[in-house]
Length: 399
Image (cartoon, rainbow, N blue to C red):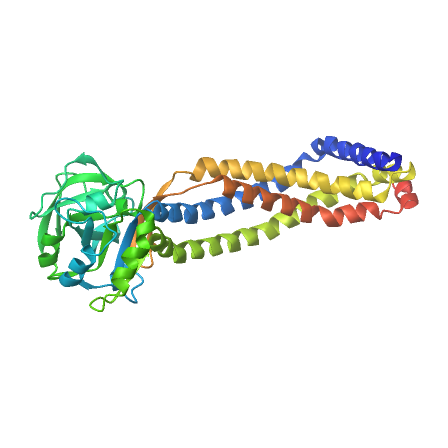
C-alpha cells in the first residue's frame, strides 16, 4: 500500500512540474493545441452536415403513418400507382377514417428547376401534388404565412426551407413551370422535416399540367395506431390486384437519408484523419521539445529515486491535457460556427434539393473530444518512452 501511494505521489509531483513548465514552452504547446483544435473543428463541421440532413429526414416520419410505393421502387421518383390502386389502398383496414373518407393522400412528385438565392444557379426542387387528406396525414403541417391553396386552381404553397433557399417563392409571386403559371399563396412549416423543402399544389391540377393523368407516385396514409401497420401492410401485400411495398414513414425517411449521410460521414472522417496525422506530428514535436528542454530535470528526478513509469505517465498526461484543450477549443468553435447553419444538398434518391440545418449534437462533441484525447495520447507515447530511457549520468553531465 505504501509503495502504491508513493508511486501515485511521484506521478502527481512530476505531472504538476511538467504542467507548470508549459508556460515556458507556450509557442510549441499553443501550436499543438491549435492543430488539434483544427482537426476537431473540421470533423465536427463535416459530421454536423450529415447529422443535420439525417435529422431533417427522420423528423419527417411518424410511427403511426405509412408510405405505399410500387414494388421495387426505392423512392417516389421510381414509383408509379394508378388511380384504381390508390383507391384500393385507401380502402384497406387499419387507416384512420373520417366522415368523408380515409386519411390517405395519393400524391404526385415532379422536379422543377429554380435559382438559388445565394448563387443564382438552378437547382432541382420537388413540386408535389397532394390530396386534401395530406394535411391531416402530416400532423405537424402548419400554414406559417398566407393561406392554403384552393383545390382546382393553379396555386401553390411553399415549404419554409424552400422559400428561404430559392428565389421567386415569396407570397404573391408567380411560377412558370409545367406550361402553366402558378401563384404562390402561402408558406408552410412541417416540424423542420423534408416537406419544408418542397412546393405543394392540388394533385388534380398538377396531373393535367404534366400530362400524368391518374398516375401517382405514392400514397401517404395515417394509421389508427402504430400497431395497425401490420394489418394495413398485410391487407395490401396479399391483395392480388396490387403490386406494392408498404413502409412505415419513419423507415421510409431513414432509408432516404442513408446514402447521403454515409457518404458525408466517410468524407468527414477521411479528411479529419489526414489532418489528425499532421496534428499527431505536431504533438510529437511539442512533447519531444518538452523532454529535450527538461533533460537535466528528468535525470535529477530519476537520480532521486523517481521510477521510469511515473515519468512516462506524467509525459502522457501532459500530452493528453494539451489534446483535451485543443478538443474543447475546436468543439466550441465548431458549435458556434456550424450549429443551426442553414444549407441545402441534393438527395440522391430523388435528385432534388433538401434544405436542412447543420446539427452539432452532444454526441458529435463527445466524439470530437475523444479524437483529440487520442491524438494527444499518441503524440505523447514516444517522447514519454524517450524520457524514461534517458541515461541518468550522461543527462546530469549535459549543460
